[in-house]
Image 1 (cartoon, one colour):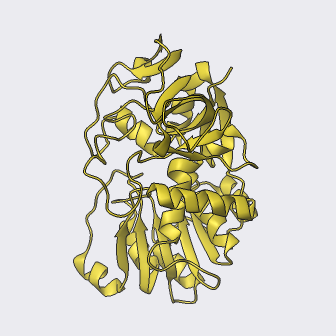
Image 2 (cartoon, one colour; image 1 turned 180 degrees about the horizontal axis):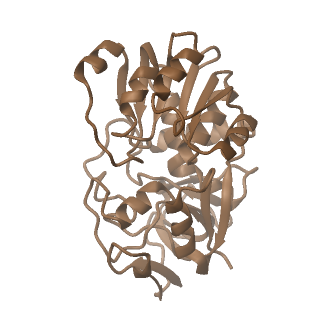
Length: 338
């Protein structure tokens, strides 16, 4: 089979394709022919040395994939040859408390990921791909989709009448927009691109705030809710956006902290944090049980993931570069099967 590996981090030139032996499924494993993978910001963060956890060079990158089961090992009962599956972002977090292996299991950081033609994996580390989705669409679900689902579900699920703020137009934000609208919540989105305003509204955003034009966009969001603030902020920006998110969130609302798209870190004002009256919940994608719930919701609602562009397998470097440019709206996908 062919597989991509980063020889070292720092440059996309280090992403090299190799010929490797075909893996064979062991007891309890399935062999998946990978049809498509999707990229996440973490893939860029690992490459550029900005990932907050350990990252080992020489591994196959990418955590999110969809493919077809082409062989099964002894003792496999959950899947059969021909089944369509997607990867679970955390292969050994089935539910409840996070396992102690959560970091060492991390695809592309401490274990081989999915940017390859074949992968042997535990039957517990994949779930069924909803019938209505293509492999390309399915590959967007494991990280971005489940993260948005976890952010909106949680201890207090978002429901009709609630308001949600999503930041930007990346995968997590667009999934959160679609899922929130599916339950009747109002969505406010932010962007720095005037060209994306109409696209976000077409996806269901009631209002769009251009944060490049208005650095105090948190106040603008609060004003759009009649001064109340939003019930949930899907906070993907991190240190550079948290201060404005605190201005946007309602008293008793929640900030679901996803990631760190921005690198500037002006610090957090403790009194602003305390005075917001909001809860702060850290999101680490979600467990297998949540992925099963999410895929059922996708099937029931007919949700279609937003894909910005699909690249060919031999265009993997271009796909990474396109994601890093920030010009995308939705997910960037690599089609592996040629």
